[in-house]
Amino acid sequence: DQQVKQNSPSLSVQEGRISILNCDYTNSMFDYFLWYKKYPAEGPTFLISISSIKDKNEDGRFTVFLNKSAKHLSLHIVPSQPGDSAVYFCAATDFSGGYNKLIFGAGTRLAVHP
Amino acid sequence: SQTIHQWPATLVQPVGSPLSLECTVEGTSNPNLYWYRQAAGRGLQLLFYSVGIGQISSEVPQNLSASRPQDRQFILSSKKLLLSDSGFYLCAWRIQVLYGYTFGSGTRLTVV
Image (tube, rainbow over all chains, first blue to last red; front, top):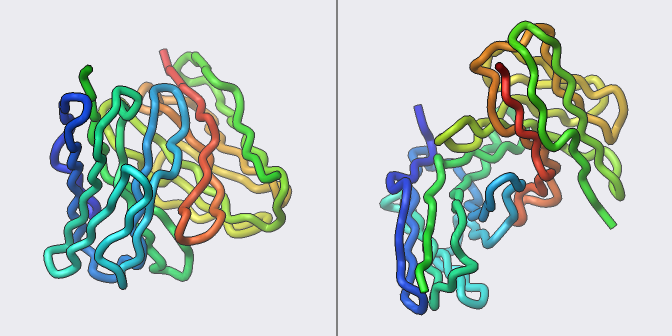
């Protein structure tokens, strides 16, 4: 039973346009949501996060939106660049059991074309 | 500075052979440590986490085990590998909640 879902396995965007990556979750107790970027044969790197008490967080070209009522978050990249091509993972923090755990989605592969 | 080291980078092992992957953290004490696996075409699955020496919690029943013999050392092991153990294994360390985890560079394990 996936608690964090990324239903689009891939996304192709033209350079300079907006990339929108989506993520849905089922557990209303999740406190923080994070986006990670991963290149092949490397570990994921942190990109941006948002607390559940906010609905938007912006960092340069990256903005994360959170809709708690819909249990949905999205990552917007504007403008998209070829170097943004990677797999993007959505994650949520789970404190159940008294320990902090990150629950990841399956990832979305973004391809930005010149 | 705080860093996380993971080795080896790649590993090819025959079915039935043992496994030992090591992860060490520098620049911090008493970190929360995690082992994740990314199977082909799938997301990151949490395998084990540890909040201290000798304290291991398993998330998914499997053919693997973990140990934490020292504060900054986390080891993933198997007595007999299966084909289904193939994947990309990642060690991670939690910094603070808003920044999630720092991941190691990963180990690509291929069981043949």
